[in-house]
Amino acid sequence: MPLSLRKVSRLEDSDGSTQEEDKIQRSLGQRNRYLLLQKHMSVRKEITEYSGIYFITFTCCQWLPLFEICNGYDSIYKWFDYLKRKGHYITGYVIMPNHIHALLAFRNTQGQSINAIIGNGKRFIAYELIAKLKEQANDDILDKLSSSVKKNERLRGKLHEVFEPSFDWKECSSDKFLQQKLNYIHENPCRGKWNLVQQSQDYMHSSAQYYISGNQGIYLRPCWCSSPTSR
Image 1 (cartoon, rainbow, N blue to C red):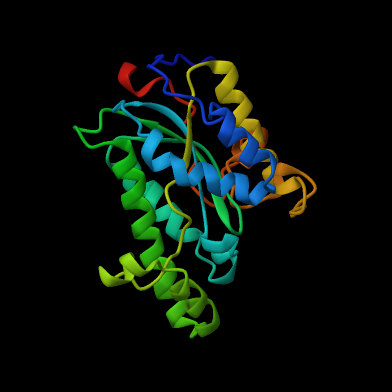
Image 2 (cartoon, helix red, strand yellow):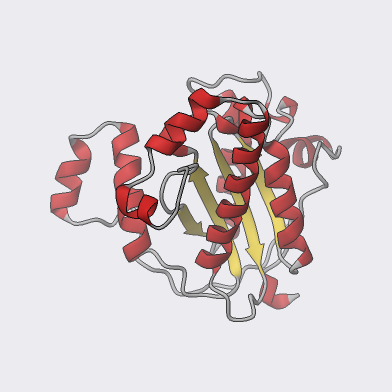
């Protein structure tokens, strides 16, 4: 289905680091490279637009499979519902055991930054996951999340670190890039170490089932939409 996207000004690409950073990244493993990007993202990668379609990724603390451990997938769906009530759209998603990828189409955010919207969503989901872990009396995981809190944040009253700092994002400024990211999202459960299903449409916590078979999965059907500003 064709998609019209508004092209917005692009900031430095997440791969556009300095030569010195490139040398550091080549010396690190995949996880450390990801964490390095996360470290710089809050400084270099603010989303300056108030609408557009974005590929968003955020990851559980220490890459722990928190969504799986406490069956917290519904917390993501609650956040999706909130975004939709605010007039935004869920174009595609996959909730993996320890991270989430989502294609989110934001309409005019009434002056609130998209970074703030994502940050508030992470806080809401974190609160829900901690509540579930407490209900399970899962003290081992709670202790791990507590020990991950930085000293300065603990002084401000933070008790648990549920997610890795910041989040990764890329603006979807073309049909080709959007489709590429949608395919990547849907193939995630079938790849690498995960191998959770043989076919992407068989993974329950993904929009793949709708896009491939037309059937609605656990969550309401996603919206393959035009640029939010054109609606």
